[in-house]
Image (cartoon, rainbow, N blue to C red; front, side):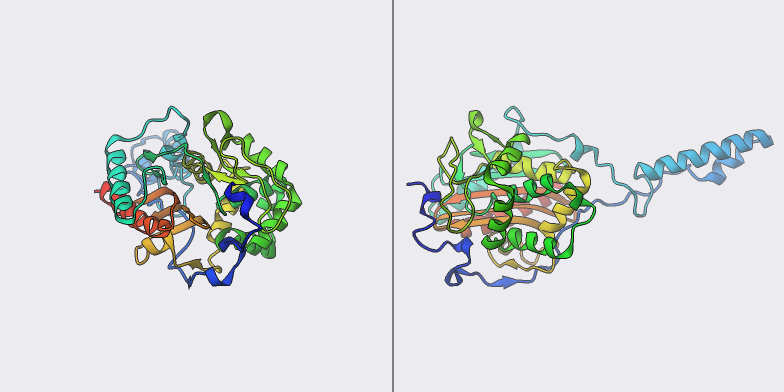
Amino acid sequence: MKPGDRDGRRPCPDCGDKSHAPQMLTPEIFGGDAHPEEPCPPGTTLNALFRRSTSRGTRRLRWFCGVAGVLALVLLGGCSGPAIHMNTTLDSLSLDHTTPVDAPLQAAIESIDARLRERHGLTSQQTAVGLWDLRRARLAMINPDLIFYGASVPKIAILLAWFEEHPEAAARLDTQTHHELGLMIKVSDNAMATRFSQELGLQRIQHVVERYSLYDARQGGGLWMGKHYGRSTERWLDPVGGHSHAATVRQLLRYYLLLEQGRLVSPAASQVMREVFASPEIPHDRMKFVKGLAGRPVKIRRKSGSWEDWLHDTAVVTGPERHYILIGLTHHEAGDLYLEGLAGAADDLIGRGSH
C-alpha cells in the first residue's frame, strides 16, 4: 500500500499531531538574496568626461554622452547603492536530463552522502540529494530521478498554482492571505493547505505543475499533488510511483531555480512567493536543515516534509559568498539526522568553494 493511501490510518506529523510537534526556533534571518554591490568603474565621472572637451558644442555632446553612460551603468547594476541586479550566471542556468554535473562538487557530495548513510544506517536507495551552487553554476545530484513519497513538500505546488490563478496578488496580496500561505509553507499547516487546494482543485494544481514541466512520467516523474492534506477521499495517484504526493530531486531543483530566476508566474509573483517562503513572523522548526545550519550567517527559505519514515527538506540558502539550492529526500527513520548533517556539510562545501 502506498504511503499516500495510509493517511486515514493514524495522525500524520504534517497534520498537526501535537505528540510529534517539534520545538520551535526563532531563526536569525529569513528570506532575501545576497548579491554584493560592485563599485563604479574608474573613469566614468561626468567631470572627467567634461574636462576632455575643448569647444562648447563638444562639451555639451560629451556631457550628454556622459550622463547617458552613467545612467546605463546604474541600470546595469555597475554602481553601488540599491541598483537593479543583473545576475547573468543565475539567469542563464537551466536544468534538464542532459545538464552535466560539476565533477569535483559531485565527488564531494557523494562522499558526504556515503559518510552520512554509513553513520545513520541508510542504503543508497534511501537518499536523494541535489546541491546547486547558483553563484558558480556548479551542480551535483544523487538519485535525481528516484521518486519519493513527498509528504508535505508538494505544498509548494499549491503555492505555485494559487499565484497562477491569482496573478493580481503579486501586486496586492493582503496580509491575512500572506500569513495563511506562510503557515502552509513554513509550519505545514494542513488546514490551510486543504483550504487552498480545494479552492483550486487537484487537477488544476497538477495541470499548472506540468505546464512548468515539473512532472514528466517519461522521465521519472517529479512534483505531484494528488490529494488534499488531512482526511480526504479524493485521490489522484502519480503514474510513476503510485503516490498521492510525490517529488524528485531534479524537479525540486528546477522549481527553486525558476523561483530564484523570477520565472514562476511572473517576476513580481516570484518575489511575493519568496516572501511567503520567508514569512519571518512564523518560526521554523528546530530540525533537519535548520538545525544543521544553526549559528551560521545564512538565510534560508525552505519547505520540509515528514510522514512516518519519509523525511525531507528543501531550501534556498543565501549568505556571505553563498546562494545555493539544497534538496534532501530520505526514506528512513534516521532521515532527520541525515538531513541535519547534510546541511552543515553542504554549507561547508559551498563556503570552501568561494576561496
